[in-house]
Structure formats: C-alpha cells, structure tokens
Length: 126
Length: 369
Image 1 (cartoon, each protein chain N blue to C red):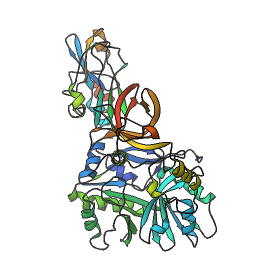
Image 2: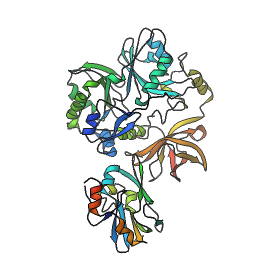
Image 3: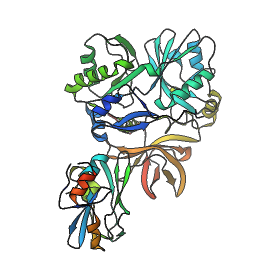
Image 4: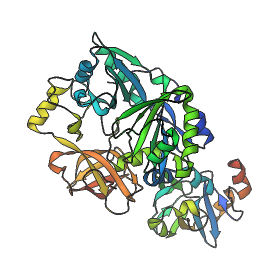
C-alpha cells in the first residue's frame, strides 16, 4: 500500500501536500482501492471556502457516492479539471495526476494536527 | 404485501467461501451474502460483453410444481401461457396480485410432462412460496427446493466455447429458451439458454453440495476464454443497459406488467388469471404511465434510483433504477413516466443530489450489439 512520506493524512483517507501557502488535496491509495472504479468527481468551485473535516467534493463509483472532506480550512484556488474527462485518474495515480483540489491555507497550524505517513500507515493496518 | 421474517444474519450460498477466497467484496443483497464485485465492476462488465463472465445465482429460488392440475393452476397464477412451451422449454412470466401488480417476475421451466420448475428472485422466495401456498388447489404439489439447489450463470460471446469444453459433447447446446438435463459425476445439471445480461449464455442449476466443484471447473475451463467471476454490481450494469427490469426497483406490487412494457409476456386471451381484470381494463382504456429508459446528456454524476424527474419545472416521476453505463460511458436509468411524456426523444431533467441535469427518453434496449 502506497503511503508517501512527504504527505499529511486525515482519518477519512484524504492526503494533503503542503505547497507554500497552499495545500494540494486528494484521496489515498487505500481509499481508491476501497471505492474501485471512480466514474465521476464533483469538484468544488474555485473561490469557495472549505472547512477542515467538512465535505468539499464528491467521488462516485458505480455503486456509491462518497464525500471528500477537506483536511484544512481555507479557499479553493485550483481544481483538477482533468478529472472531468478522466475520473479514473483518481484510481490510477491517487497521489499524482489524481489530485482533486488546491486550498489556500487559512490556518497553517492545522497541518500539524494531521497524521504523518507512519501514523496513517498504522491506522490502515499496513 | 410484505412477509414478516425473523431478523437473522444474511444467508450464505454454497459458493460463499469461493467468493471470499477470490477477493469478493461481500454485501447483504435481499438477505444473502453476495459479492458485489471482485476486481472491479467495470472490468467484470466488459468481461461479459467481450468474453465471458460467471455469476453465482445460487441465492435464487427453485420451486417445483407438479401434479395433474399443475399446468392449469400455473396458468391461473401466472400471466404468460404455458400452452406456448413444450417439455424442455421455458418462458419468462409474472405472478401478479389482485391489483395486477407484480409479486414476482420469474422463469418457468417445463422440466417434464406435468412438472415445472419456477426460478424466482432471491429476495422474494418466502413471499412467493407463501403466496402460492395461499392459492393452492387440489391436484397440485408444490415443493420449495431452493436450499437444495445452487446456480451459476455463464454469460458472454464465448459462452458456447466454454459449454463445448465443459460438457465435451455429452449434451448438445440448448437453443434460446430451451433446457437440457445431464448427469455429471457429482450431480445432475439443468442447463438453460437464458440470462440477464443481453449476451449469449447459459444458466446451470444443480445440487448445492456440488457447487464449489462446478464453479472451480467452470473457472478452470473458461480460463482460456478469458473468464472472470462477476458480482452483483456488474450484473446490475449489464441488465440495465438491456433495460431488463429488477423486481423491487422497476417492478413492484403497484405497477402492472403492461405499465412495465411487458405485454408480450402477458396472455390476455387466457380466460382467467390473477390480476387479469385490471390488465384487461388497461388494454381497453390505456395505461396512465409507462416504464421507459433514459440516458443522461453529457457528463453528469451517475443517476441512481429514487431521484426526482422533472418536466417543465414540475416533478412528474421518480427513477426506479440508475447507473453509469460502462458500455455507453454515460448515465442511464429507467422510470415510470406519465404517458403524455413517455415518448422517445422527450427531454426530461433528473434531480441528482439537489442539481438538475438534462436527460432524454430512449427506446429499449439502451445497448445493442
């Protein structure tokens, strides 16, 4: 199970990559494996505000729709429009091309409260 | 009419261990532990469309009806006409309530001169048997053998190649809607040329205690043909592309089979059967709504069941089924639409979690070879 060391993780299986004043967000390999074939991603609107632990996006498999929770509080500054034509990127490259949105961090200290790779790896039994 | 059942854990089919060993994601389907998928719904769907898939259908019910009055009794209980089938043939039919609504849809197999096997939906076995028992007449013997039987459906363009390799000339292939019987070392097998996917294929019914053996042999002998075990997720996307109805979703006690577009499986020339008066009246006066398929326009979240359908801003209906069609790459579904709007190319809107997306009513089936 892929759990990159340079990321922070939530209990609800999102990851965030700090990028200066921003954070890039997606779902983990563990999450995409549980969902399997993702057929649709509902992206947040650029400029919308997101709250830590509140729903910000939706990924849908054939059988179910699942909320994606923002790991942090802030404003959405970028969304991955490639997922509109190719939602399967979330499955094939969850930490790379399958990123979902970028947040401008309002409270950078929130990052310290997230799990590091070792803690997340342990929580998924890996 | 719902039958109260004791609250119990879901039942396991004879192939439960096989599914778990193969990595099946198990869910509770109508009171049964069933695999919703193994590797992935899309992969399994395309295996059936392009090569070969195997489904555990052991959860379905097998009810045997025999006795001197069996045919007359069944012709009174069911909508289709058993005069249309010889020994060794089967037909799709409906069991209705007095309001003409559907208790269950099923296939009845004429396995012998006065002997019939009804294969019914897994979630309805107890209810169907209770209904039949409450209408039982002298000269009819009713036996619920669901627990004794396992079933496997093999579906896909390579199904006949697998059939030939599996049976090795010991029995010839049944034609569409034909059934044959053969003894293999563990059990006798009833084989029909039927299926719920729109592809060529066979359904095998046999002794439950032989199920793991037969399943493994099918997967082994089908390996050269690209066979994959397939779960309920793919079963749903495949049948919905064909617009085959699902009882509990598209069929219900509140809709007649005429509203369901199933009139070819109803013989109103039969003098009497349960529900006939309502259907005769509908044939006379027309139906108020019709089960039609729709296709989303453009990329949208997948439609699902129980979503509101709008026309000119007014809510006119609710979806009965919905999914992402893997073959078409677009959302599809079905709904009972009021007759005045139930026309091909009619534009409608589907409410998906608070947002409305355009869709269009299409002709059946949504997928054609």
